[in-house]
Length: 392
Image: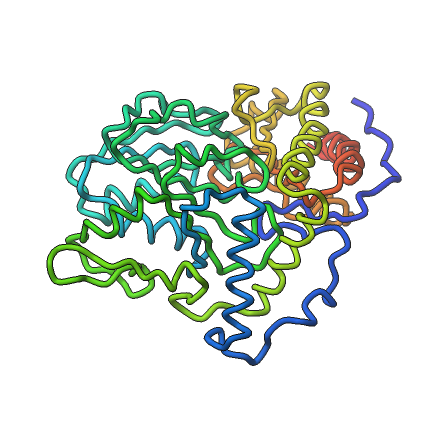
């Protein structure tokens, strides 16, 4: 095979990382000038910033008025674990997972929490597990979009509207890019550093009235760390919700610099037209990659079914027989050589597949990415592949 001509047009921004993701178009350090630095998050100014962030989140994500929103510690991971440790136990639990982070929730449910009635709905990379086996009489923990697999649930039709159990949804790489069916979701979690390009460390926890009712009527039998506690016991088996948490009085100290950064991103989305703008941008961006994959014989989408393919972290596997004939370590080394090559060229940074996923790539395509950068990227991927194949 002749080596393809080295492209001349480069992405303006080479940052295609799946998290933290790139900042919004036009971002600069100057957007942080109004940050409440050196001020207490309990001050009037600090609390007003946190409340503004919660209110903007509700407005842009179109969160129902009776759902509560909190800023919580430890990113999306902290938000999911806060929900699992606080809510699970009184019913049987189903945990559905098909990639690395979803499987972390299996570990919590199976090995850390003493859940007596646990059912695992599991699948390998590229596939959804049998989520339609969920019957609604149990609690459910699932990811909407598998960040390391690029596989998402296409909708929430598998969740019965008249369910008795609670649904806990890790939506960190779905929110702001994919339509969430709020009436089907009792807990939604995510972090700022995925689809909004925010800084790491802060999680968002959104609770339905049904989830609040569980908190107020159920006390887990295991010890609860301080950062997980959302209620105070009344002494009669019931609990009182910490309402201040959902008005911006965070459990621990948030970074007001990061808060300012996320406020900037939220306001930018609002100025661009809101949630539909972000959905459309993610769909358009992902289509650039889908189209390239379709016409390229050495690569394939890791997600087997079109309707289950992510429009944020588009995950790909190398299918050229010269590479698939190699052992897994050699396949991974080949993929990493392409990532390094394009990193050295300052064409694409941090776009390798997750360490436990098949050898390939994960290119971020959500609403903060420019379509033109993705269009410029694909010829470089072809060039790097042919260059590295010639070196074998």
